Image 1 (cartoon, rainbow, N blue to C red):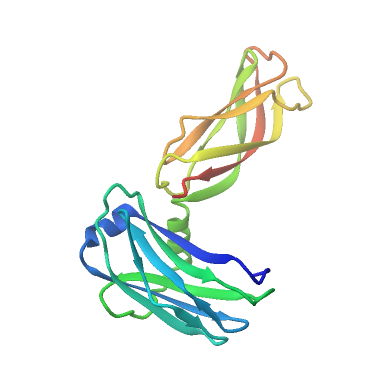
Image 2 (image 1 turned 120 degrees about the horizontal axis):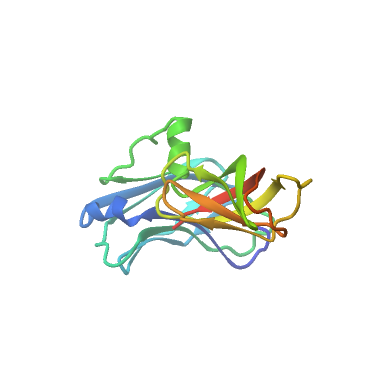
Length: 220
C-alpha cells in the first residue's frame, strides 16, 4: 500500500466447473496474513452466479495468523468463474506492506491444514492459464510467406489462449537475417499453435530458420 487512502483488494478467481458441483454446500476459505501495521479488511466476499456473500471484518495484525470465511456456495448461473476478494478501504497507512500466503478453499465448516502440492503439480496447474517459451527451427518458405515451427504446450490450457509473439531471429536462405513484415499465430488450441511469417522479400521455394518468443494467456 503506497498511499494512505483508497481501496485495495486481493482477487482470486476459480473456474466455475471446479465449484459448481458444490452448490448449496458449505465452503470454507482460509488464508494466512500479516501487515507491517495492524489494518482492517472490511470487504471480504465470494461472488458466484450473480450472488455476493460477505464476511465479517478481518483485523490483520503484525504477526502471521490464519483467517477463515465460511459460506454456502451459490448456484453457478451463467458465471464462468467464482470471485474471491479480500480487501477494503485502507486509510491512514502509507508505504505499508501486506502479506498473504496459503489461500485455500474447501468443502466443510472447518479449515483443515493447508494442502501442499509438489512443485511439478503446482506448475502444471498454473500452466493451464499462462505459459511462455521460445521455439526455434527450420522455416519452409513459399513466396514471401513461411512457417515457423509450431509450438506444443507443456500442459493443456484451460481454453484456446491468446498468443503474443516476438521474433528473435529470422534467416531465410540467402539472407543474413531480416525483420519480417509480420508474424501471426494460427490455429490456437488448448495444446499449442502454429505460426506464419511474412518476409519483406520474396524467397520462393526456399527454406530458412529462426526463433520466436511466445506467451500464451488463458486467464479467467
